[in-house]
Amino acid sequence: MLLELCEFIEIAGIQRKQVIDALMNEDFNDLEDCLQVECAQAINANYIVTRNIPDFSASPIPVVSPEDLLQKLMALV
Image 1 (cartoon, helix red, strand yellow):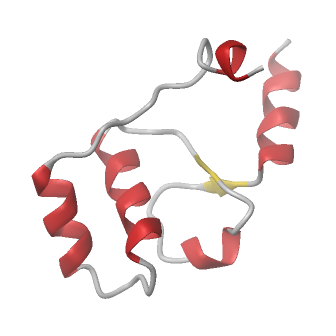
Image 2: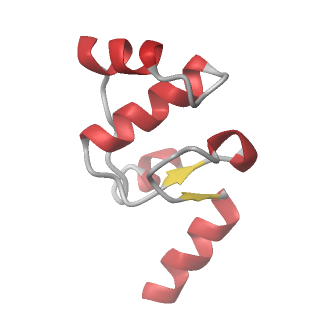
């Protein structure tokens, strides 16, 4: 299933700049969440997919649950 999912999503790597930006970002309490936002911004992601939506309230990128993403994808078919 993960291999099939990789056909539809882009996997972002992380660079030194994203780590520094995340460390300096005071809008997030969790560094890992902030790193995800930095990576998503670097690739101009449409969404961040997580089950932990409340922790991404400061995200400039829309955040959706896995279920919501599946509904969005199914609407395209």
